[in-house]
Image 1 (cartoon, rainbow, N blue to C red):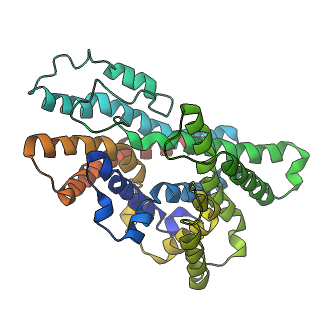
Image 2: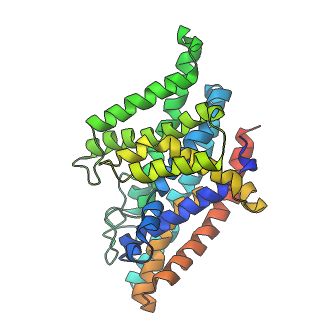
Length: 350
């Protein structure tokens, strides 16, 4: 299924917008009181929906290309934009908040502990291991300058895992077995491991976080990959979409530790793919994928907007905060797409 024939770009942009709403609480806004509970639950599925769509779209790439071509495309899609977003925090966003906190002066900014350079260096491995610059006083952000990007390292891990499985089948006698059964088996193993090592909202240690969330997000991502392999068995109909939606609606809140999301991930993928074929998307959005840029820039944008609103303008309007954060994030996302992402993708596809 070619991406241009659906509205998945629009959906992913919507999911990135959901991420902004989810993080209202980080800036001391409560989005849970703004929407009906079912909509709050749906908005909370932004990351899982990102992951199932990714699993669905990336799997054919793993089947099509050799290791060099595959890694070039996947690394090119993820890292260059991430790298510049990483630079943007100590160069653009953090200095703005420092100026607001120090009466228009940047004196002492570079000498903070942790320093801007420390933030940049420790953010290079696709995860900000030292997420703060200075004390970040007056900013209610235990997660630091960009708490959204924690999923990226897990996403890239899924890219490597699916290719490793397919490459194993290509190089051994196992290649005679259909890929889809191998992915089904792998998905089942990951679900079993998720039961043994259940996801915790507040893991006790970094190792616990790394292990449990690897299984959690891999289980969701593989659900999207699994649907890709079995999609020819299930035609896209309203009846099937409704049944899949009911399965998700019943199972997701039923199981603890987010296990219901993993278990229903193929059904969630079906619903999203079905809707992407039925809901029209503007041509411009089909041709320009701003979702990743919004995902990268929304958090630091929200930090700055929140500080300006609270400290300088003394505003506490959640709708105005959301619209301002979204608009500025879209501007950064467009620059990221037009200047970095689109050009890199063109280069690696030659």
